[in-house]
Image 1 (tube, helix red, strand yellow):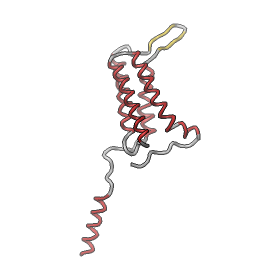
Image 2 (spheres, rainbow, N blue to C red; image 1 turned 90 degrees about the vertical axis):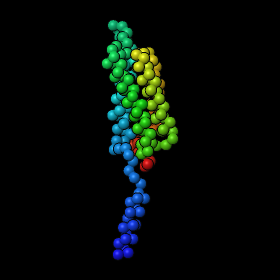
Image 3 (spheres, rainbow, N blue to C red; image 1 turned 90 degrees about the horizontal axis):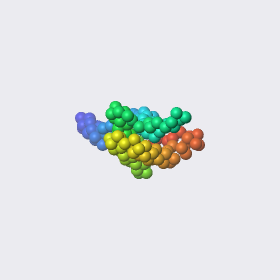
Image 4 (cartoon, rainbow, N blue to C red; image 1 turned 30 degrees about the vertical axis):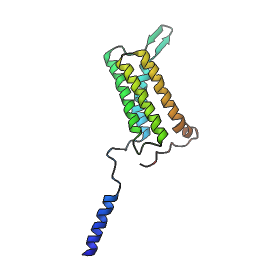
Length: 158
């Protein structure tokens, strides 16, 4: 009987001492966030800014009605929140990764503010800053691996 009680107590201790699962789902990896949220939303922003120049003349690509402005705002919110998702334990590589993800989120916040003001020029300028944050991160965490023909390693386990 003492053996049963001892084993039960030991089992309870091991279960209680094990690391609990995080309260969030990490089934999607950073690549999923990039292709499913960040790329798709960033391209909505970039495609809604600047100008198309052709033989027929120059035409602004800025939104022309509230529905189009709302789509740009929504895209900016998606990129902002994706930056937060990339900093979760299990997705973050290191402190520099978090700094870059936060910079992307902040740049998307500036796009959101520009879209809230229905300011096409500001969407273009802030969208450019967003592009710069993406490129800087890719230079460190993506391009070196792809250029070498190697898979991008996963982040360290949380």
